[in-house]
Image (cartoon, rainbow, N blue to C red; front, top):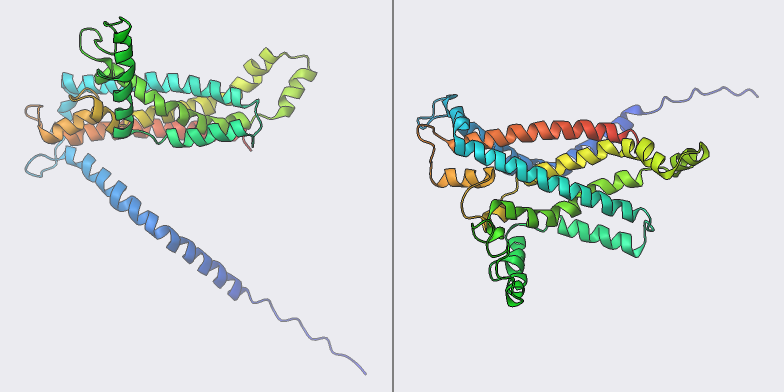
Length: 307
């Protein structure tokens, strides 16, 4: 009795391709609500705000509105936004990096590490009117700390009179204090993964070759962490450069770009130039594009050591 070999039937590749296609369709369908949110509430308003600076009151396209950047008050607002963002970002980055360095000696799943991570996640999002009220109640003109200083005889302090201009908290330099409240936690969240990416084998190799702890940090640790550190610094700068709510609750007049945009929307003050708010928004978008481009480049460089 002879048996005849039956050829194997070819694999049904069409069904596999159909399953993959359906899975991709489900994925895109799940992303549709988020995509609609981004387009309707972020992309379209941003485009309209920026484009408004390129049209006059009659709706005709013009570049004459860019002359607003020559106005001293506009330049002063950009300068104030840049220096306060740079200052708080630098201080917040340094303090946050020190906190991350201290956390390296704790257990990853220990109580202290998880507590700091949880607190940083909450405090990094704590801003706006709530944060302003917390500092008004603490170091405002009638705040607890201010009243206590007055009660012990320190009547002439920065919380009452700063450079003869009134309470520090209600001036542009005073914004540094509440801004640091959420800049430091944000630095901890963004920089801690890079600190955790340092491999113990690098320290062991350094010790084997006779290197000291100082040598390890100056020749291995710090060069590896530098892209992540400066990337986090840029992120902190961008986060504060576009911050509005806290400053609006504390500073009544303009002084930084977000407040100047609000002032221009309510009352145009640059004579002969239309849609100044849109021009300011365009300037902010250009600054943010430059910052995010630099941030992306630093993140790509830092990711080489985190694999």
